[in-house]
Image (tube, rainbow, N blue to C red; front, top):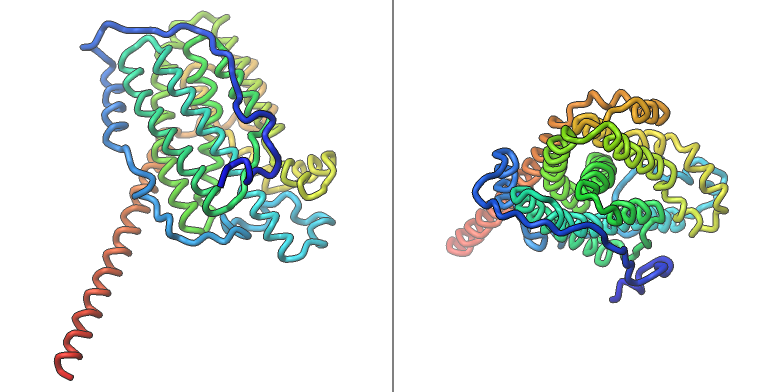
Amino acid sequence: MSTQELYTHAPKESIWQVPATGAARFSWEYDEGRRQLLALYQKGKDKQWDATKRIAWDLEVDPSDPLGMPDESLSLYGTRYWDKLTEKDKGDLRQHYASWQFSQFLHGEQGAMVCAARIVESVPDLDAKFYSATQTMDEARHAEVYGRFLHEKIGMLYPVNDSLQTLLGDTLRDSRWDMPYLGMQVLIEGLALAAFGMIRDTTDKPLPKQILAYVMQDEARHVAFGRMALRDYYKQLSDVELREREEFVIEGCYLMRDRLRGTEVLENFGIPAAEAEEFTERSEFLHLFRKLLFSRIVPCVKDIGLWGPRLQRAYVDLGVLELGDSNLDLLMAQDEELAERLDAERFAAEEAERTGEVADMIADGAATASG
């Protein structure tokens, strides 16, 4: 079935064209490279995986409760509209919310794939080109995974959120080679990682848990790459150039905080836009979620050297300044370990099942022989 038939409403354009600026850069130095970045490139090669084989796509998913999230996570919960919903209505609402969330994940991953390809083209150092080539493949796999989950398991898609599209456009239109790193690796993927992690750690459904855990394992490498490349480069910039990057970060953080809330879902259920915004503002779950959204961004921004007074004031206003002292390396290590642990648990369960089947066959054979 064509994706166009699954959209809740038609996207504004079937192909979004973003005018590209900036130079393609070649390096004729093939022997040398940063040790840490080349080690990350090797890890990127070693950790490639096949989404068709690693993920258990035969697991059933109930479209009326795809993620198993608590109803409190729905911003309509506790309002006068919620009490009027039938059980079917509530199932439809859960389906729409899951579709909206994973649709934005899908659109963001396509953006990440394009940005990673742009980095291959524009970054001056060959070691960074090597690694970002592996990341381009990672992002293609992530888009494949989210697209398949939406098509086969949820059966519904939402168009790209206006604010996400704005941030993607701003990132891609900038001619400076470091901006795809800053816009994508730090902001968009930082926000996505927090959203992935919240659902991964809350859902009781095995298929979305697998998808998110494995995607986050890759993203841990991507964040490390962005930090490494930008930290080195930003040490060379003037105060004026650093402030320009900080302004971009501030605008991007407010854009995502204020707009990426899923009001489109409520409007699809007939809730006026003003009320939809009010409900998202009053949702305790969403307040917590919006703070968690910055758990990966703030320490990364501080680590790469963007920590001027105006940026710090913005983070005070957003209520997230203290996150600058978070241990980002620990968060990334946990993301990788969780994916490995999930694999180990799955394989152990499959092995136990196979062992049980063999034991049953032996027992059946013995019974037949004795009979």
